[in-house]
Length: 217
Image (spheres, rainbow, N blue to C red):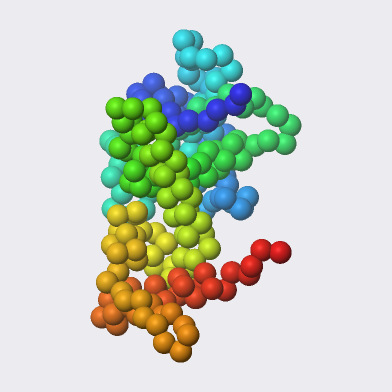
């Protein structure tokens, strides 16, 4: 089983970073496999004492120029780079570069976002005093998390993209708890959203996106 997790940038890691020759740093990759501007990666495995850690563990570090206003440690302020490290047991393989391993881990942040959203959707309220209650609550929570994720993917696009970055609490307030009315006329149902609602146009776009989804074959 392979793993990849964040690794704390401790004093020993900082000392190892200082030993990395300039020519060893290689360009980092973005999610599409292209070069990530202003980012480099290097491996620190041979520069650290990893005795006591699982066998085969490797440490990869990424450095990037920080965005304006970013909070840096004293170490990072010295050379102007911001550092993040990961630990993985993925072995060296022909054609598999450090940049790919680091970018693969960075893409995992989306999983962590989904876990955080699930906690806000009810996952943070378990366990209960009885197993069956916990089981039912978890099932409802996973359904809510799936609906939220698919709504973001399929409906919160285009003119509705302003809602895509909302945390669950903000999404509930702006979209799910909107003071709208369901009316009937000419054999049709209509959802009337107050024009004064700041996200009325985005909500209309959400329903238009959903209506445009083709039926399953």
